[in-house]
Length: 184
Image (cartoon, rainbow, N blue to C red):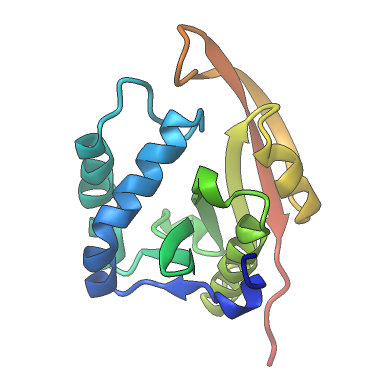
């Protein structure tokens, strides 16, 4: 039986930790895409494609201090990750984007996504962000999860992104959540 998640705290990665974790991050992304996650990629999607995403798209903004990459482990295995993107335009420095909430298929239904999102909100408040914004495939299992975490629907865009497996386009639901500033 897996220990409670409280014994597996979420870790915010430094650049060096990110580099050390890169193979596991790539494997996690690859597994999630092949499991049907609509997170920007379509098949075919190779392990090299997954590693390239982390190196080319995520590492530079992490190095610049514009992104926080959080991970959760279970039994020393990378179980999930989420990102807080704070690298927005100057008139949007009160908000941040939630990006790439991923839970490995082998570790789903254990509360990992909730623990990651709780830490993401904590990190957002620490950075004086009062609004979180995200998008998710309409009807996906993540949509009710976000709703249960207090995110509200801003709207739905039909035909927003290509399905990872089929030659069709899926709608996306934009969601937001207002955060209370931490006055402690």
